[in-house]
Image: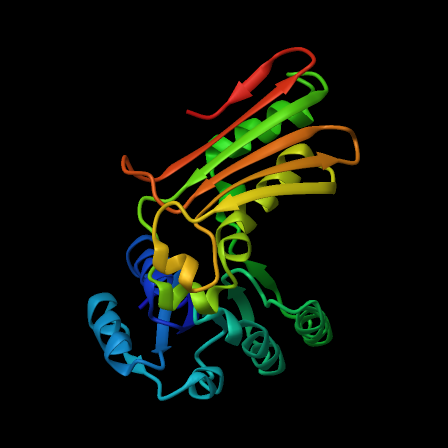
Length: 257
């Protein structure tokens, strides 16, 4: 065992929990998964076996009470994020939490206040900020390489839609999927959005509409500095995962592949 590794507890063994667990177990030698829990114990057991996690906890309280756990990874359902952040902060654990923190601004404020009070670190899972392609685009903007930004177009399409059961608790396409693109838009332009318009439809799966959501949307954003941006979202692209961005500036343009 690497004595310098950071002990991690995982709360949530679903779709994204599996991704994070495998990343920690097989590609992050500085981390050591100490324990995992999920409301579906079979899911936790399967992931523990896959990633050689030594302890399957009965609940999140057991994970947070484990002295070997120095940081927690929260990948449970959205409605549990804010309470778990508060509990983890109170337990003195550093926190990585999947987005969004909550559907409620008041709940988000309480969670952030708990983190500040405890003095622990909190990171939300906006992974695209760390993608080398998007980082290069950001560099082209901040360095002035393309001049003053004028237009930005973001394309964000998933290979397959989530099941309606997931949609019902996720907050819908804008809080679950577009949230990444809104974060990326602010990150790349380096300014805040002051106006937003959207048109949406159910074009992929009628069951998503029956669950009260959309699966296809186009957004138009206007930033305070005058930049106009579009975000193109669809829950299904038959050719696979599609993430692209293009920014037109006064001296040129830059885009990802």
